[in-house]
Length: 438
Image (cartoon, rainbow, N blue to C red):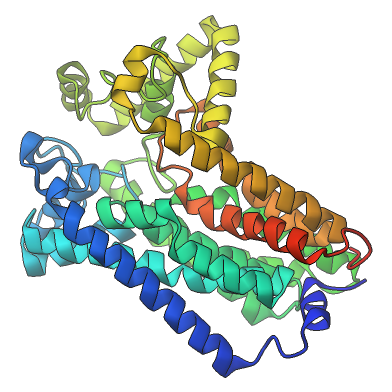
């Protein structure tokens, strides 16, 4: 049984030459950051649109950050003061609140600082992309993967134009994936505890990471079990580290809102936005309290928790009454997450004019990533499985709720690594079998 790390060393014994690696990573990050900051200079005015009280400046995150700065606590995610909220997890709104406190609420300076921070998060993602590729597929693939991320169009655009947790989540999920790969090498309790802590911090940034992190940990437990190494104690240490990080937030939610709320409370609304009978768009307008007076009035009257429960009841009622429609919608949402295709109708294309080029880029990346995954499995089941877990489990919740174009972004680094591997392994004629066995 040969580990993935052993395969890399076999391919290139000098792969760990740290000065050369540090130099490569430095230039990747520097070029990636410079590119993103140049784009920021052109796009930041879009965040300063005063329409709907600067809603395009971070949406609900901006509202919560403003409330924090004004001394009203973690509250009021929409148009007016409405009391404590668990709409978002705390890390990114708190970062934005810190920027607001220093540079002003909804100011040009705050927009530039936040977009620059996002650009830095995205540029730093070159490092885990490089290290994931090097560990799994060798130094040649790693260099090309790191540079591919530096120039990756979606990474540049969303970091330079979108004040949201997306780019930080992307960095955290990449680090989580890299950390999970290292768990295979050792049952060290400290290493597993660190993984649990990292998972907790990542979940406090965006709970979507939990669609991948725990499953990767379970897979690594299985790998240790197969090698007759201890696995239960490491797993418990990881769980303890995770619980230590997330418990204060759970306790806060219970005291502030009077209910046990793990992470966020808005699942019912997300389910309702995607399952209400309107299908011309993947997330049709008119069903969210941020843009619809009817929903806003209901949110104010019921309060956040009761409103979310009511939205979930409405969505479930629709799903039970239209099971065939729900199945079709779920399939369409899955297709959208993998290809960016929703519709070619005139109404839709007017709303999403950039979808054709996005469709081409997303579909091409998906095809290459799946080819890379296939080649990884041919190298060894243990090599391909972590990537398969990430690719196939990450988007699953969006199949039943609703997708957005930025929802796929946190898993893009894994797509990029596999796509680059598909190309490099083909070009160098790497044997597809027997190089590593699980």
